[in-house]
Length: 325
Image 1 (cartoon, rainbow, N blue to C red):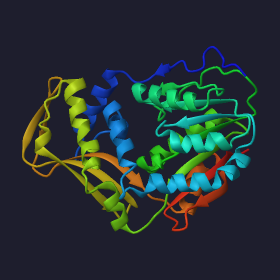
Image 2: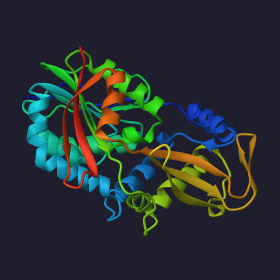
Image 3: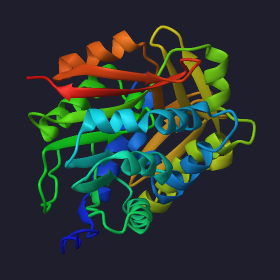
Image 4: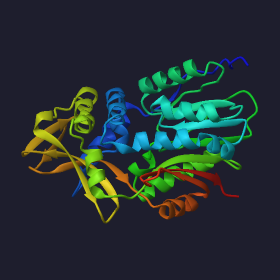
């Protein structure tokens, strides 16, 4: 089947630099905790570094999720059904996506969605090369906000979101509920969601995963300072900050922070930001769930849990949910 004319064409609805600047100034002005949205970690360099993180020995989520995908992809394909439009939230490595696409029957099209345009185009090109008959419709967008899907050709029996990597854990419960509501509305009646969900486990395993011995996660986190210097004309002294990963047992999450090692002042578009020694920028959360806690969160967003696949150690899960009637 020939590809539609608009397949592989990038649909760009990404946020502007002005929004990045406004969000950073607002976040760094917060008290008592400075914070910046984790979505800004993923410029081209950040996306490349995250791909490197996924290959580290200490970082269990990617290889564990991939093993689940390889073992149960055929069952997932049955749950999804034929003639689906697959919408991937956060187009990353093509390994997991390729495993799923190989198992799906008569998939109508693939829509990768990512905030990083360059990374998105590369990911879309990889999938298009591996699946030359598959219509690919990349969309550059902030998926934490509502966005429109591009027009596609062919019969679409159901829209199914694919949200791998436990990215949903990066959001607070309130934010995660909003994202799930957006997905539910976009998939619509009869739609589905195949999502990676990281499970609660020994905090020491988590700490090693988010503060690796090679320092790749630290580089990923501190790259945000480089990005602000480059894109927002800030003057962060990167050597005056360090990466920290902290486990918050009350909220069941790993927190990533960029910590000031000494008192300092930073200029950002005419705004002066003051840091005390030990003060941090909270950049990312990674919440861990039980099967029951995530099912309840998804239920409130309009989904019902259909099936759960786990690894033997129950470190990670892939869940399939359907839009509730």
